[in-house]
Image (cartoon, one colour):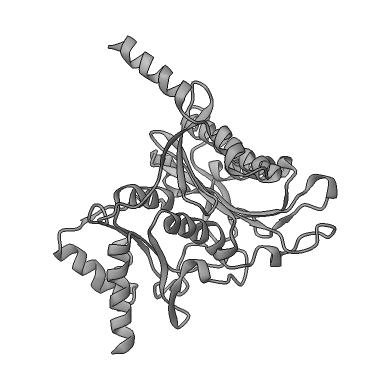
Length: 344
């Protein structure tokens, strides 16, 4: 049995497309974009290694700091942030970086060590769960700068709607380490084979045609603070055979929703009137991936209208917006409740 399994594993390693190969082929000769994506996969591998060794290396617990959005910082938050910042800087193709862990944007001023890309990232999403060994991840979005390459980039190069994002993705560190990416032409899933140090192609991700499993994912502890359509939708899920699944790590909850179907909801509430999730490095990349996989990503009723997450124009680098994303079947049902409310 062991020999058979080993033979199957060897065959898969030899026949599967590696992420490196995919990057070279799918960037269509754009050497700078290929360098950027290789820097991303390197950062994901280093973070996966740090997380796997967190217990023995005393990396659990708080670092005694608060980040740009007011969250308590874990030791692994700082490590992951350093890994991402250094990897992207050393790629030589970035001009501006935005991290959840940094109050201000990082502007690369050396003309010999910068390029056309602006990257926003959450180096360790869901880190509040890290000490109990729950799946966490990293999320990123990529823009091509608009300002002249002879000048330093400015925040205007990245404070743009998600429709102008050229690439996005996330890695998930759980039972396996996975990396899911899109260049705006489909969504592709890779899994890390630690033995050879390569991400291997798993599948092209698409939402189930029939909507998939009946699953809703949200923090129901905040339900009484939501607007009425979200309350009504959750109640209808309970009455129509839906199961509740909520990890509390956006990467994990959206990953499951992409693969199984259903809906992920993180709306605005009375305390967080613009929602709690950040636009540039949570909303935009996950919305781009969701839409490219055949799903729907909306803010619900936000700033007086119902719209796509991708159409939001962030006012500052840590701006927030409500998040509703998933399969068309389920998101459409919630949007119908918003439309019904607006006509009442």
